[in-house]
Image 1 (cartoon, rainbow, N blue to C red):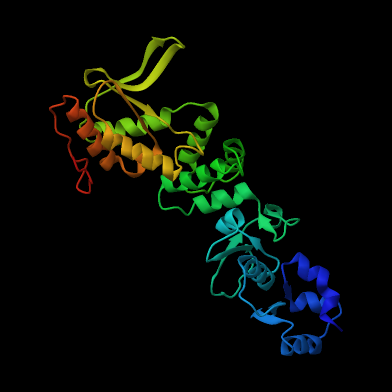
Image 2 (cartoon, rainbow, N blue to C red):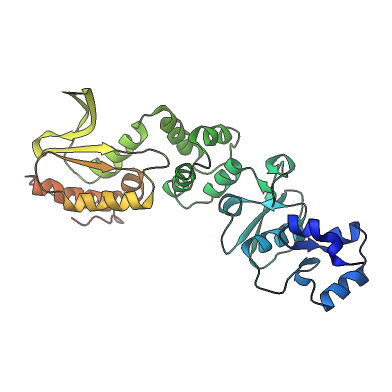
Length: 309
């Protein structure tokens, strides 16, 4: 038997094939040993081969992991980004399997229904994979950053993520993520405002703002998130999913904090400023307040406070 008889299968699986598949389609172990000897096939894992001897691509490695653990599908970061040094693979929760270097196995309950088997390679449904990945994040803002990046790339929406989250009761940071996603869909910012007020302003003894101050403009009534009239300062809190957590925009916002000097100034702060770096944010805001006439001193929020004023 010739290996060319399996061309369609090899093309579908990006040059990867398993011993199981070859035997099911009429090959023998003698055929397989001959193809390996002639270097028509190269072993990737026990019982899994690729039909070239060059470096493995990411897709080669993904298919090889799936075939080794079959039935299996790409999961978490691998299902979302289709890249990375580690291949994440999902299998049914009832199975116990051996480990492969460079592969991380995730055992899922309800595995069959959570996989898109028609895709090549098969993978866990996007929103499902994203939330599972986010649940492993160290902090809730890290979890939100993963979801935000996916929304920014337009591979999902806050609505679809919120719908999926409703069916996932054991996700880490679930309640907070649920509320943030809902507020993002509704266009409100109360969670972010509360976070800023508690973790940045009050915790570090900064001046108190007028909340949701409204003023009339040529465009009608405008509501300001935090207005510091005495210091000519407005702070707008930007928590848009898929926008605020973009790293480049965050860098721009940080530079704005350091560059603030005169006149009625508007600063835009977001989730990273109030959740990930509230102490640093408070220190930089204190410099802004001082440059605009504040005579107070910010205080440390605790023994581990990173405040630098």
